[in-house]
Length: 250
Image (tube, rainbow, N blue to C red; front, side, top):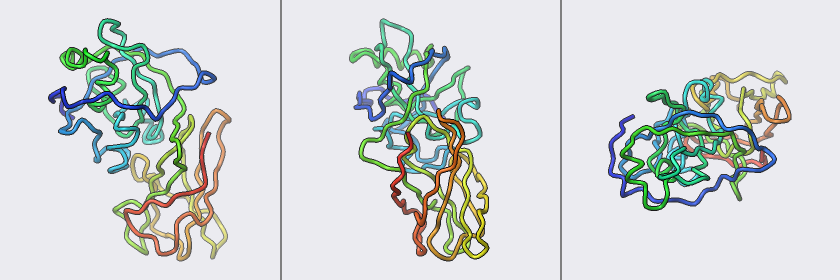
């Protein structure tokens, strides 16, 4: 990730993630920087495997997270409030971001998209904030909120019908992490574990011949539990297509 860009293209944006008072917790002190982007948005090549979704979700207020927050991919799709601690340059609320990538800089926990980085600044101080390059921040985990969107299961572009199926979960709401995923094999009536290929991408070389039923293991404030998505992907699935479910995590 490079660090050079012209800051004037970065606009303050409307958040779609809302911190909730009942999830209040202590802030963690850390550092954050930003990566270069020609349009100030996220990168479609992030380590989570989100593609274009990772470039634009949450109005492009996204970030690469350190190893301890990326968690070998289970940290993908988690949300944080990040605010810089310089009161002369930054707002009290900072920015709410979605983790879409892995990345570490100079003792940082976040490498922010240019839009997210500028969103920490007061309205006339973005240029000065970019000049710092790396800033002291504090952050807290918050629940993700995607108004109007329920969870989607995207068939990854690398999938090859009918012999190789890779999926990535989009719009993962709540304060949750996806730990594992299984696919239902109706012919032998059992769940078959999917491999975490990388990031948020799970795959199998034995996809069922009919509609695809999945279940995924969630870690949230209620503990660890399984959520089932019955027939969520049609039998004639196509690579690159996202299929909406009725699931909305909390």
